[in-house]
Image (cartoon, rainbow, N blue to C red; front, side, top):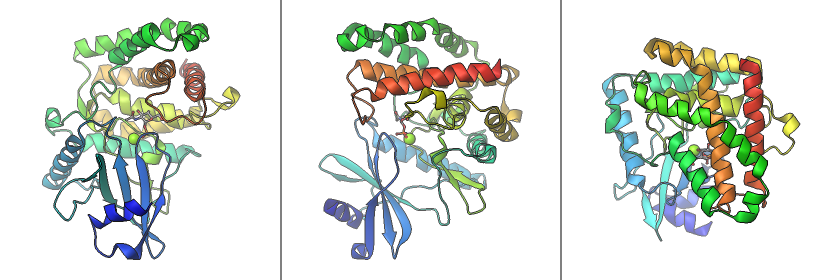
Length: 343
Ligand code: GN1
Ligand code: MG
């Protein structure tokens, strides 16, 4: 922790008036909250440089997006990192990249979607985020993770893990492998989308979990946060990850699969919020495939957790040996339950 005060000093003065505490539960970065007189003033983050190979791309993307919002007079809010005293995007120390983001006053985030209104508010925010960049030159955004939501690529990584992964784990999970293979149609439909050109490439958030939305004291959404994976993408990523993470009362860590289920009212709330901002920008073909978004994201996450399990857990932080396996079973249960409510 001591070293973090030195990091903070690279950004602001009077560091000794501040305290730093561990913050949040993300699987990728290390996050800390910086407080002054018990009030939250900043989020300090060590960017995971193994996952995000080009932290400068993230910073440049955020800069050009916020310049766009200013230029178009939009009132969409984007919490942007502040620069170091040396005018750098990051403070680099021992190969680690740190950034500092002002804490949005009177805001809070939630970890579970408890009522449909929260799902609606979040979906409205993510829809609004993409809609705000309707005419933005989306291809000018730099990739921050190559192939992030490219399902064909994730499928290839799964196949590779089946060939080169932990053989004991492979032998013990033949049923899961068969289940994932049975759903290959989700992958081939993704390939079709790539070729059909009826789905548009847009400014896409790619991590629309509920904790990435800030709420005010009246439970209204303020804005979206965590802009690391903002890249060109399809709406299925954002709408789909909302289905994946808001529908079930129990999240991806839940071990009791009976508690993992898709809730219809939340499904409707997500669709309503997203359409409110996005419907008039979407093609007929896109509107026809709102449900595909859920299958796409839930399946891809199952595939990613399972691939990591076969590769001996090199990507996701794990708390116990079978954590990625449990996460996979959890997502497969969610996929089944999701199909139940859209049938
Ligand atoms: C990772 O760390 P977090 O929760 O922001 C992952 C997402 C997954 C999620 C699953 C860069 O996000 O794609 O959906 O875990 N982000 C990256 O919990 O891989
Ligand atoms: Mg994230």
